[in-house]
Image 1 (cartoon, rainbow over the protein chains, first blue to last red):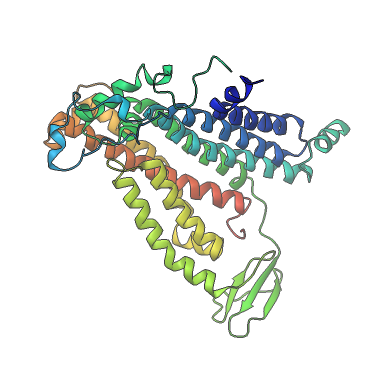
Image 2 (tube, one colour):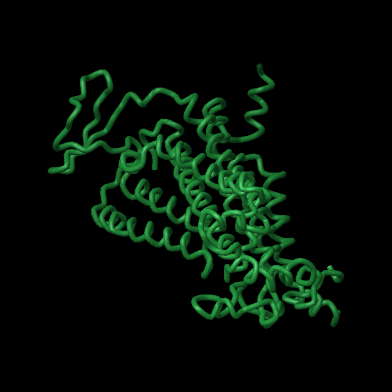
Length: 136
Length: 257
């Protein structure tokens, strides 16, 4: 029992990420309403963004922008001066930067599809749509 | 779970393969202090180019799903008499005079009238756009870049559409402008890459631009990154507005929140 609490606290980013991931997965699979499924998809994407950004964190490091890298003195900064331990990992940030905008784009496409489905079937409930399809 | 590295551990595997190389070399190789921008537009240029293409594709898909098969305009219109604040309903069967001096058209379903919101949002929009341009142009030295600045520029037009109505926003920036800016942004990106190819380097190897821009190859990478960020910004801005207009009005571009 005494090992369990530090085990959870030390890795709390993973626990939050798994919880959000499962909430999103549950909404996508179990909910009948199409808009709720879309919301679940967004929660899922947010969980993955949180996971990547938390991987990028580094104790005692700052944002990945080279300090004093501006203006006249910038040319004197070479690879020997820059310590990798001073800056957090830029790679997860790069990946998530594009993922955020793409998640907005997928959200737009999903909502457009939902509007078309609503125009056709007058409902967004999955079981009612399936019932209407079977009747034909 | 026990096998995962603990939070913010400096010696975790994610920090010890390719990322130290980016941190130590990006300044010397691209002269861009913001490592995220350097990695985004130079080291991982292909990824970002196709990411922009995905966004462009999403805009086009929304257009084809909603705008092409749109239904006819609603048969009822609502107008507000601006002097008295009275609203009237006009059925489409009657003739509507083309110029209505004292009347303004309002949405049929949702039509509050608030001078404070309209005025403050109208004042806010140019400052938002200026900030968006700053975020794009200053992405080399501070957090920012094409994606973020493009979203801010798009949000400024969406704010106009929300605070006034969709017709006002479309009068300012028509559908044709979105449909042109969206592929133009992607073409600026891909064209920069193709230009490098024509000049005898690899695709998206911005060092090739040194001869055209009359700078050394390292500074040319910095300028190449700026050019593609502008392309990304244009594409993202146009797509965000385009998707919003299509979804909010079900493709009619007539009434919508």
